[in-house]
Image 1 (cartoon, rainbow, N blue to C red):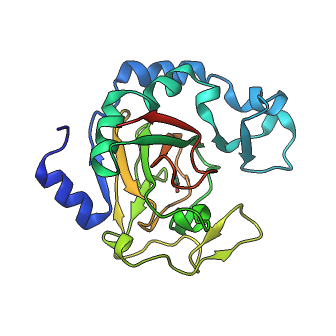
Image 2 (cartoon, rainbow, N blue to C red):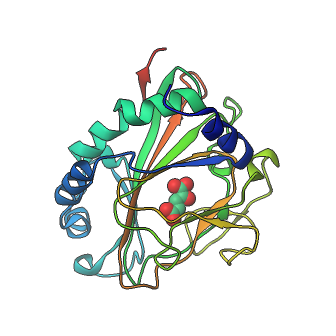
Length: 242
Ligand SMILES: O=C(O)CCC(=O)C(=O)O
């Protein structure tokens, strides 16, 4: 068992669980190295399957900054190794289901001074289809120190029990969000993290993050896991049979 009963209770009650030191600092250093010049490299030429969204899509290539890089395991062998390692999968198996599939891995390099806010949302608002249920579980791993100032994750504790809320589509961003975009919510809990820390959170817990107005980058990578068979498009690769 990789979790205490206290940790499991906390996860069930809040919809998220912080694990300090989940990924080694050596692995975090390797990820940083493998992603050197990632903005320029992806602007020049990105692998076919990698999907990049930019902070400013109209910026010239040499000044383009990645907002989100989907399928980050294809650009970093260490990310690919970490997402299938026992340190994370043992916990996913306990919190989600003994059988584990990869849904996706995305790099979120919220760069100093330019990284945009992520408005409050539930991930299942993006992921819901007629064939799936909200079993998916995220694990966001900090690559840089993450603070409120550089836009760490914030959660509404217990909101995973409210069911799927009505979301609206914003023209100027790439997603669906709860009304009101990002603002500091009184009932929100800020989760600062150190490099290597990881936060597990359900697909229904409401979360968001402030813009990075600081001078410090805030790189993070979110792994999304699913139960095999829970929707065809939401299963990229089965990682654990039982
Ligand atoms: O990293 C962020 O600020 C937002 C990430 C997020 O919403 C997610 O991984 O689901």
